[in-house]
Length: 138
Image 1: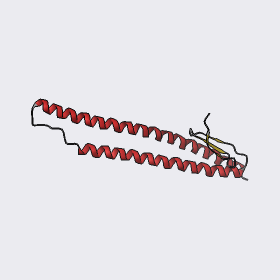
Image 2 (image 1 turned 60 degrees about the vertical axis):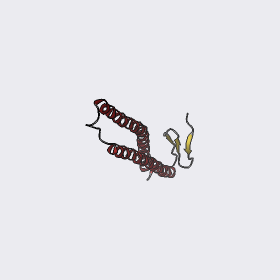
Image 3 (image 1 turned 90 degrees about the vertical axis):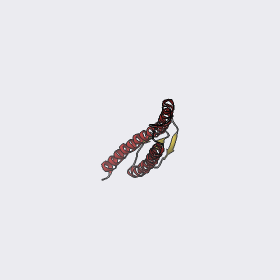
Image 4 (image 1 turned 120 degrees about the vertical axis):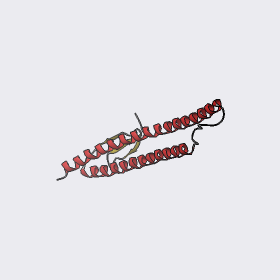
C-alpha cells in the first residue's frame, strides 16, 4: 500500500503517490471543498504535462537542427573504400543520434501517458463530486 501524498480531512480527498485517490464525502460543504481540491490537482497534472510536451518539442528541434547541420554524404572523390567509410561513419552518427532521441522521447511519452491517465481519473472524480453536489443541494 502506498503512503498518502496529501490527505485532507476537511475536503475528504486523499491523493496517493501512485496517482490514485480516495474520496469520502459526508457533507455538501465538504463536497465543494473536494471539488476545489480536485480542480487544483488537475491543474497540477496539466502543468506537468505541458512541461513534458515542451521538453519533447525541444528534443525534436535539437535533433532536427543537428540532422540538418550534418554535411551531406559524400558522393564523389577519393577512392571507393574511402567513400564507403565516410558514408558508414555518417550513417552510424545519424543512427546513434536517432536512437538517443528515441530513448529520451520514450521516457517522456511514458510520463505523459501516466499524466493523461491521472487527469482522466481526476476528471471522473470531478464528475462524481459534481453529481453529488447537484443531487444533495436543494
